[in-house]
Length: 166
Image (cartoon, rainbow, N blue to C red; front, side, top):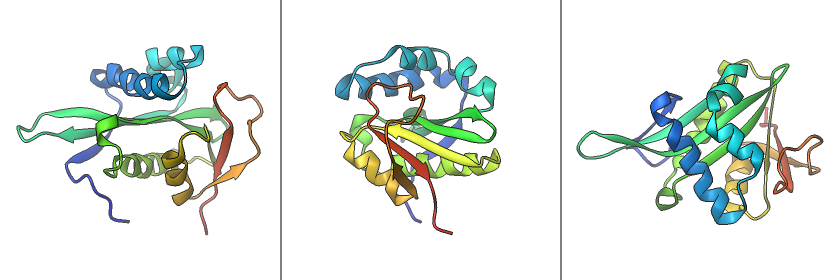
């Protein structure tokens, strides 16, 4: 599927983007909800809470005319054990939403999930986030009863599992 945002590339975590991981997520959380304690914990130390357990953090880097790059989006795969991953902490900077960056991040996350040999991918979200839910549905996430058993988030009233058409 062709996407927009040709001046954007998707890259793996590098410590130089750590603050952007927190910034991008805190921005949307504060706009729509509140930053919960579990958010602060994960966003403040993705190396410990995501990467050390076999997860991945990806960034969408926007290339400027002068060749410099800055993070305008992010997404993470948090390993829950036994090949089960949570798609989490997906955010795109407000001024860049609707340009295909979220789709590029999703494509990168699904490729990473396959590379990790994952067997199940799920996410938790909110019914307030219509454009995000539409993106998830468009790539094969299907709604399941919410909240998910063991949910970490008070804001989550949507639970979806990736079930692509075969």
